[in-house]
Structure formats: C-alpha cells, structure tokens
Image (cartoon, rainbow over all chains, first blue to last red; front, top):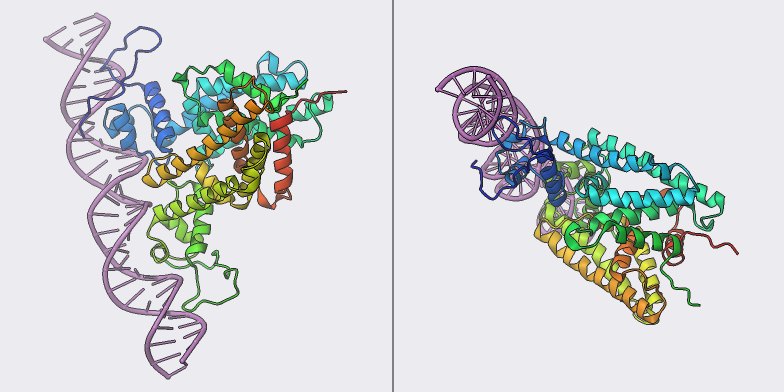
Length: 212
Length: 212
DNA sequence: CTGGTGAACGAACGATCGGTAGGTCACCCA
DNA sequence: TGGGTGACCTACCGATCGTTCGTTCACCAG
C-alpha cells in the first residue's frame, strides 16, 4: 500500500502558521476530500481505500484523524445543516412579511448550497439507514416545516396565491432549490446571484411571459 | 439460510394463466421488489442478502431469475427511461406551440414518475460509476437537452419570458418535477392530476398572487 | 542533536460482499 | 403416476469491506 505522488495535499490553514509535527493532512482536509469523494461515488459506494487513494495516504492513516467512516458523514451533514439553519436565524428571515422572509430563506439557501456544495449535496442524498443519517433527516424535516409555515403565512397575508396547496407548493419550491446541486459547477462563471435571481423569478412570477 | 414466512410473494401475472413448475417469483416480481429495496437502502447499500430477505428466498435463488445485481439495476433504469421517452414521442409533445409541448412533457413526466415511482427514483439517484449507470446518464442527458430546446423555442415564440437563461430555467423546471420522488406517497390520496396542476401553476404563473 | 509531536506505515482481523455449483422440491399435464 | 419444468436450497468461493495494531517517519522547539 504505497503512497502515490498524484495526491491532494492539505493546503495550509487560513492562518499561515505552520504546525509542529510531520506535515500532512489534518481532520479538516480529510473531511473536505471525503465529502467530495462521497459525492462522486456515493457514501456506500466509497470504500476507505477509495478515500485513502484520494488523500494520497494509506487507509489506516485516516483513522488517525477520525474515528471512522460514519464520523466523516456525520461531520459533513452537520456542516450543511448548521449553515442552512443559520440562514433561518438571520434578521431578514424573522422579520417582515412572510413572502419576503420566504424569498430571503430561498436566496440564502442557494448561497449556502453553493458555498458548501459538497456537504449540502451529501445531505440531500441521505436516505436514513444509519443512526447518523436519521438524525440528519430529523433536522431536515424541521427545516422543511419552517418553509411550509412561511408559505402558509404568505397565503394568509394574501401575497401568495391560494389556489395551490401550501404543503405541495413548499415542497416543489425547495425541490427546485435543492436540484441546483445536481448541475451547479462552481468553476463555470455562473454566480450565486444569477442562480438565485432566476430561481426567484420563476418561483414567484412564473415562466410565462405576459405580453402588454 | 431459511425462508421466512413474512415475505412478499409474486402476484399472478395480469393474465390469470397459471404457469407450470414450482410457484414462486419470476423475473418481473424480483425486479419490482429489487427496485423498492434499492430505493430504501440505496443501490450500493443493498446487499443480495437484503434482497433475498425481502423476497423471502435465499440469495442464490435470485440468480435463477437474473444474472446479477447489475442486471437488476439496468432493467430498472430501462423501464424508467423508456417510459419518459415515450412521453416525448406522444402527439401533444411533437406538435403545437413549444410552450404547450413543454407543459405536456412536464405533465407526462409527473404521470410517469408516479406510475413508475421506484424505477424513476432509482434513475434520478444514479451517479455514473458503473457502465450501466453511465449508459442511463447518457440517455438522461438526451432527455434534458430536449427540454432545454423546448424552453428556448418558447422564448423565441414569445411565450416564455426572456429574462431568465433558458438553460437555467429548464434545469430548475425539471429539478422541480424530479423532486416529486422525494416526497410523493402513492397511498396518500394525492393524485397525479393535483400534483401536475400545482406544478404547472407554479412553473408558468408563479406563486405570487396579483391582486385586482 | 535530542525529545515531543503529529502523521503515516505495513500487516493483519473478522465480517460481509457478489457470485457459483449441484442437488432438491413442488407444481401441471399427459 | 411419472416426466418436464421452474423455483429454490445448502454449502462454499475469492475478494473486499471497515477497522485495529504496533511501529516508523518527518518536522519543530529547546
């Protein structure tokens, strides 16, 4: 089990400070690579060998940084959920008309989704087989309820059309948001703003053009 | 490895004709169960043992009906893609204004998605690691291009607003459609029609209510 | 140049993976 | 009543899985 030269190395942390000890990966760089590989091959389809190869180290070296495969998944899902819930606690998400709060959460979700693409992608593919996944799904459900409540409020306010079931509408809405992970490529020139604008346009005004 | 009593048995085929030989599963009933279990645990997360347990037979019995795990996936994905492409060949999908053809394909996709839920769900989770998955992704890409073309045509016709990039719009649109597999439950009273109507409403007219 | 520290090493573990070989069982029809 | 047929069984294979063990390596501060 030899180390291969073509391997992803850990960039120095944000601070230029060098650490003591033998240089190499730390827990964060392992997590970052793991999330990427999990997305490429699927969590179950990724072996610790696959991870080790992507890291340029042997399998056993990974266990120096994390307790096991499940912890890598857990930490990745936590990063994603923490970022999403942070959006729902921002001022613009808690004050003002419901429809504006909804738009803020939508746009914030797009931002988080782009910034933490690998982690959020992983989150959206979780099926709930293990205990770790069940906990993540639980949190996701709370997030979804929050969205559905906003839509319901918007209908009561008269800002959102009442001829579509809020439960269905909120699901379709965030189905559209979440689908971004399926095609968004960070290095394609397309920015968060453009995606969020297109999303908000379609979601609130629709695609049909109303000629004057 | 004993057979358990609580097992899903093959219903007789559409024709009441009894087959000769020992009663039990056939290739179709195995495929149906496999697709369901693949969705519950993920393809990679599903062992042939898991399948055998769900079928109420031993692992080796499965190989009497199919050549292996990969064939089960291949056949499931083919069912899904065949059904989706069938929609694009219907009259209403090939004649008339682009925006109407687009709506027809959207509604048809919802119908297929509900009718072949397990197979389509599996299709939408494919990552392209094996050769079988790569072929399915190739077909999906052709389908997506077809949609994008319809949106572009609709813009040219003046029926679809031109202030959103057709490439982004078509992706968001079918992201919304495809997200249905994440929450739709056939036994919940919610029909294809209601979902398709809500979808068409949001997609074309948007969620905002325009008071008179 | 030495001791502390952090990272990575080779070798192996028990379990489980997808798949195979060859015989057995249960049903229908003649 | 006995073929023919289709479904299923037990027993096992080599490979790979996630994980653990004890040791070794590379760097920095003193």
